[in-house]
Image (cartoon, rainbow over all chains, first blue to last red; front, side):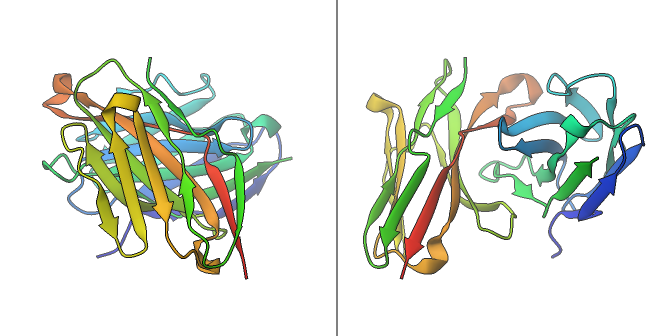
Amino acid sequence: DAGVIQSPRHEVTEMGQEVTLRCKPISGHDYLFWYRQTMMRGLELLIYFNNNVPIDDSGMPEDRFSAKMPNASFSTLKIQPSEPRDSAVYFCASSSRDPGSYEQYFGPGTRLTVT
Amino acid sequence: AQKVTQAQTEISVVEKEDVTLDCVYETRDTTYYLFWYKQPPSGELVFLIRRNSFDEQNEISGRYSWNFQKSTSSFNFTITASQVVDSAVYFCALSEFSPHYGGSQGNLIFGKGTKLSVKP
């Protein structure tokens, strides 16, 4: 089975531009998570969904960030407008609520550079 | 508040040495899960192990072993006879049980990671 798929793998954009990151979770998983990894703050949760519904978005840094999950196989994380401090690696992860299967499986990440 | 502390920022060993990565956690709940993930230089996060708070048995998987001690809130990871391919950043993480959401997990709280360098 395919793992979590993220696109693009690398994104370079200029400050002020809109950036959209995409994620396809593992089929059958009903939890989807967006994380951000920086040297300063490490890995931090931005938002997570259960059955396409946002459950906890307290980690979203500010209104410039938004996330959607229109169906069970697709999610987006959008930054508008982007700023240099948004430069980071963004990971998407998915997991199943089945007992004994709580581990999250991560995608390869999107490395975002905002100049 | 939930917290995961990995006090060792970087560790360097020579191949075939044993190495232990420390993890200390804080949580108010009696039901929780602990995880270890590996992040090799290529950048992806690889799941290694999950432990629930009711299972304090140590676990061994090949050269990897994990020691879970609730009394000291620790979940340490040992690599025996380390190899160059073990070089990576290792993250310990905590997930609290979330009965509000049908008894499923909450989000993962990660430690800052320990960078392990294994030299030939």
